[in-house]
Image 1 (cartoon, rainbow, N blue to C red):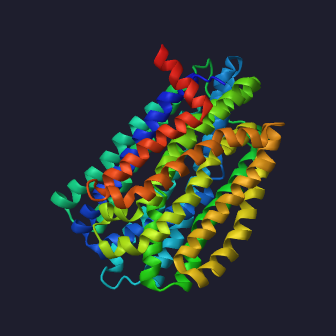
Image 2 (cartoon, helix red, strand yellow; image 1 turned 90 degrees about the vertical axis):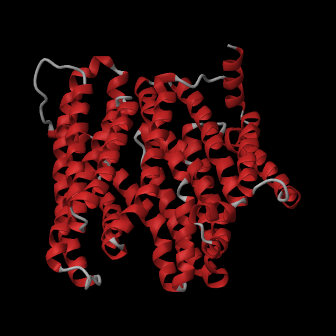
Image 3 (cartoon, helix red, strand yellow; image 1 turned 60 degrees about the vertical axis):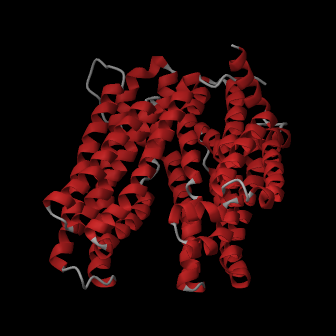
Length: 503
């Protein structure tokens, strides 16, 4: 099988997504200690509370951004329907604004209660907190709007432009916050007011770019409620998937906060936070290929869809498996490099070594998920997510009682295994009739075997090479060797790369 990676600007989209998400992560790594130093840990704790509220606000998204992404990809593949696209965007934009404002008001009311009555804020006056709480609501509203407009630009295959805007605006938001705190007013109120102003500029800018990117029309865009009704089932399914995913990724933290001691719980949080760095790679590829899959579905090009699906499944294996193997084998050394704390790294490393495997298993299933959404099917993912949740919750409770945080990490691996098996039986059977197991073995099984083999070999050699090779250098060597092994094991990647080298 040969598939040339580059159709519909996938390569440019992927590189830009990696740059945009990488810059976002880098800014967080750099800025957090700076903000803590300028604000103090107690005041900065309010920012952590805002992040928790922001995660909760994902439930209000209602799948509008992903629906816009999918439909604009459909429109872009069917030039004869270009006249309808502006009406579609206008209709869904109005719905998104209504939802975003309602979400902001809800978060405002919830934050008012929790900040003033639930959390301990003795060191910060209520007068100082009140404007911050209003900023919470405004920030959540604007984050939902930004996600919506990003979905539109992604569907139009304008992801490099989307990520350029993100890089500029994130730099303005965080860099400007430092300027304000350092030379204007070092208060939590000033911090959140600047954050709010920066996101307001972000919303205005990305909205202008989206409308500028749409095809021209002879008349103004109109609102058609029927468009909302026709896509309501898909959007509702996405909302359910988002809710279950949010519960699935957070429920273990809630359960373990009750079962583990505070210090052990902190080590678990450190390990799971480190493992989620793998999702930056997953998200970047998912965002790049989802509009491409949607366009192929719209044109009925099943042959190209299958080829693209297999190639990108192997590409996901290349992006995820070597990184997961490296982190699993060198968990302590990488945590020490990141935190600089020997005790924390020693206690979190066993959890990270296991947990990252479960994260990798779930990441590999994002390609089938993208194809499923491109077809407009949400019921399969809902059933799989519900099955994962039903197994994950009791597994976390049972295994953590016997084996502590490492047991909970094994429960996460079990959840990933359920996702993989159910995907093969349910999604592959519908999408790839007659080749479910064979293609899965070629796309993911053989690359996984290659990475496992390289990891086990290097594990046996660790004691011999530790005397002359720094552990971080050994980790990078494993990553490079495992990546080469995946390329050789994956037929689509191998054929594409060799074809490019010959040309």
